[in-house]
Every structure is written in C-alpha cells, then in structure tokens.
Length: 266
Ligand code: KIV
Image (cartoon, rainbow, N blue to C red):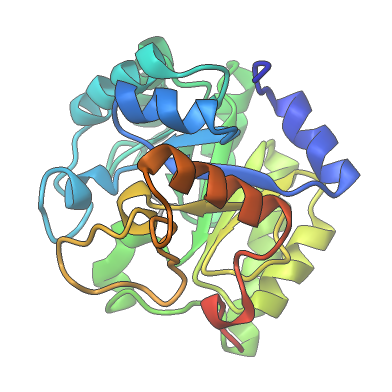
C-alpha cells in the first residue's frame, strides 16, 4: 500500500470511496492490518480496556500511548497512524502541545482528542505547529462520568444542532479529520455531507466517509462479554486473522458494513 496521507484521505472522500480504520496497539497487528489495506491505524486509548483490563479509558497515560505508538510504527506498512491523547493530556493548550509532540515523535502522523467547540484553540495551536488533529465527538468515552454511561449522543434536537455547529467550528479551526461515535445515522450523514474533511464513524451508520472498529471487537474477542450493537465479528466464517482483516476492508469499501442494524435512529 502506498503511504496514506491527509491528501489521500481528501481524495478518497472526494471520489466517494469509503476509508478504513482499525484500532491497533502493536507491531504484529500493524503489519497485518496495513497489509490487508486498512488505511488508518488508530492507537486508541481503548487499549486501557482491551489490553490493560481497566473498566474505562481514564487510567491510560501519555507514556502508555507513546509506547504503543512506537510499537505500531515498527510494524506499519504505509497506513496513517492516529494516536489518542489520553484523559487529561490536553486539559490545557500547553499540555496538548507537549503530549502531542511526544506521540508524534514516537511515530504518530496525527493526534486525536475528544470534545467539542472548547477544543477550538487547541486544534488551532496544534495545527499551526504542524500536528494534524482528529476530533472525536458524540460519545466521548473519556467523559463517561459526565455523560452518565456509554450512551447514544445527539438524539435530541438541541444536541444534534450542537454537534453540527461544533463539527463546523472545529473544521474551521483546522481539524483534519472528525470522528463520530454513537450518534444517529441520519445526523452523522448530515455532518459528513457538510464537512470538507473526512468523517469517521463508529456506531454512526454507513453515511460517514470512513469506518473504525476496535480490533479486538471485530475479531470476536470480548473481555467484558458486552458486545456493542455497532460491532460485527469479522472472524466468523474466516480461516484466519489476515482473512478477517481483509473481509473488514472489503465490507467497508463495498458498504455492506455497517448494515442498518449496526446504527442508531434519532
Ligand atoms: O480509543 C479508541 O479505540 C477509540 C475508538 C473507539 C474510536 O477512540
């Protein structure tokens, strides 16, 4: 696979070709996923749950993230590496700058932050200093204690309007990628159509430009036994992991995943 850049994402969006992303935390899976054609590897702070066994992403540190970014970089073959800034690593702009620098120096090509319009100054400063930013909106797991659980966001009219306005403001501030988690499919489609940058979805229907899943979920592995509605097990019917990764890429590209039952209504 040729090296994926922001320009590649932009041209895939313009062509209407769906873009694939998976979480990834180590060199072996980075090699396997990038060889399968996955365009973006997300070193997600979900590693706190799926690798470390915590019940939320809150205990993950920036040092944990940098360690896994460096591992993914060593196995990656051309995918764009996006790294999560963990809980409280971007509470202030100076923290965001120094923690992002650590992740970029470990091998990330872009950092991801969770939030809304309050991130505008952070996105501006990071972008101006050469760090592309993805903003994760909707269900933001680092705020699970404020949200009162892992719940669909944007179902109420005022919430939907707020999400749309925040997405626009963040794009204007320089966000290079947006990610919508657990929002009604129609709302995600509207935000995607309004955005100039690519929009990634998880539990956001098939109308977004890109799809992401947690690697362990799509391989049918679950520590908690609770499988979210938006997950599909791509190991089912496949002889090995490499084939499951290829099946995921095919399903996103031909828009057979996500199916309507993987999404949420308003
Ligand atoms: O940390 C993560 O894995 C994520 C995905 C759920 C999008 O942010």
